[in-house]
Length: 140
Image (cartoon, rainbow, N blue to C red; front, side, top):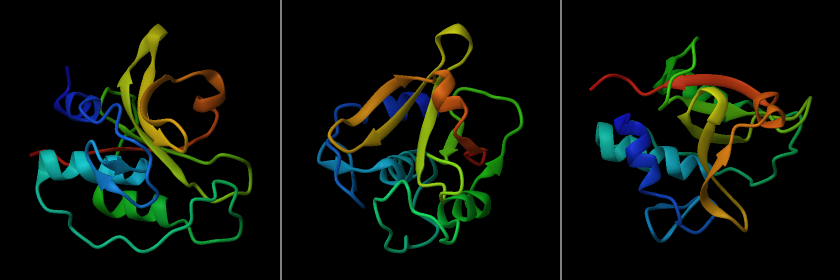
């Protein structure tokens, strides 16, 4: 199992807290990825700006995709441990992310969202259709 997937699975059950990033206490989707970064790569390389929880936000700056592009490596083929960035509807800003856990027929990803906390969900066709970017943690 990938070290990234193993670290992300350690967050399952953490409650959802907007802008949180504390394993077991509270996190959102970005906070999950930030927490896995801290576990595997060390200190976070930059402070996170404030952001809204609105998945349907339109007309804004692509902060999530821009940050992923600056700090993570682009990934072409899918591999467990990839960071997936999602655009929840056409024309909206990409505002959700998760970590690919399994590929193939049982594809799944780990993410945090309101009223569910950190869970592992099937990477179903509707989720796949929303992928706006795929990235990888830098090698250690």
